[in-house]
Length: 323
Image 1: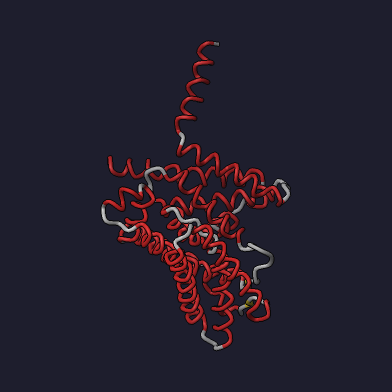
Image 2: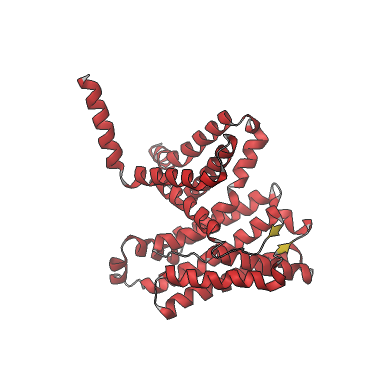
């Protein structure tokens, strides 16, 4: 019983926060007050969580990778068009998406390892190159697949695909040497290096493994929408990166001692609820990022600076006693 209680305690915040957010959404948005609407909302968090797991490996180890959005777009356009041109079907598209995404991750990883400059600089430079390629290939038309390539966007196939991705992410992060090295380097790179963990190789491998999850995100995203446009403008893919980072930051803030992979899905769900809630109350879309950023800061402070909330609570109670 104690073990069950401890497990519930560890996962409580990751479950309670999104549930409360969904209840608030139901209050402010009458059109969402149905079981189908809630289920649809839960499904909307699948794809962002998968990309967030790839970003998690990078952020945890100290990488700032701004190329993952451009990699996702480029891999989706290449895999989708090649699969359509050669009639490879959904299986062929899935294989191509994963292989191309991992190759692009290898390019970023080894560029960082060979150049030995911060990942922020490397990733932005490669991001600009990949974005330009998306506007050149296929005359910048992107990709538009037929319905046979969108089967994984339908229920229950999207849930099955998500569960497989969840199991893979949890296995790599908690059960494999790469996941242990990522956590060790992210906690203290000096101590990790002292214990024989090569920080440079670990950061390179984190960039490569993020390519795997970018490929999985390609599959889920294109299966849902059927369309992927070329990147418009400089760093036009950055919005995808920031959305994934927000999922990770919120997930880390509400994780506690629970499973970060599960909490990250909660973070993705919270992000979706915030966006829908702001649309429901008529808030202009230009303010979306500002409001979400405020929520992210609050979640981060609540987890990393619990003393701030403790002092505030103590002052409030002390003031009440004096009155």
